[in-house]
Amino acid sequence: MLLATFVDRRFGLPVLRRGDYAAAKRKADSRGVARCGRHGAMSDLFTALALVLVIEGLFLAIFPHRLRQIVAMMNELPPETLRTGGLVAAGLGVLLVWLLRG
Image (cartoon, rainbow, N blue to C red; front, side):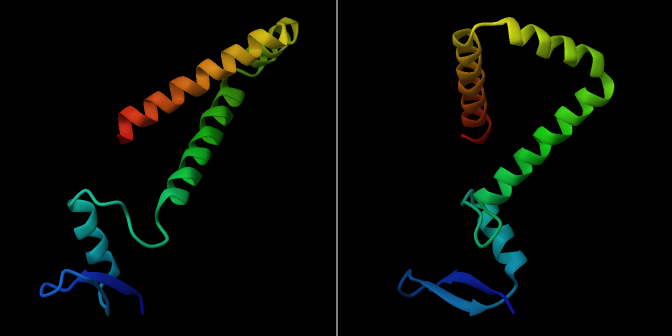
């Protein structure tokens, strides 16, 4: 049985009691508090990685010849240009996550 965290009203301290984990999670989520338990940041990270695989897989399935052309063009670019493009893409990704998950 899973334990859920509740706050003792007399002292304001967290108390572990046997209870409905899903109800405690819904209550915590509705207040805007971060998720509790094993469903936290790692779950979000794995979800994001899975979505990257889905998007890349779709591009490979739909445009295989065009992706080969893009890779051939990238081989001709100097490393500094690729590094700058990668840093810009990473920065935009961080900005988007910050704006969306804020």
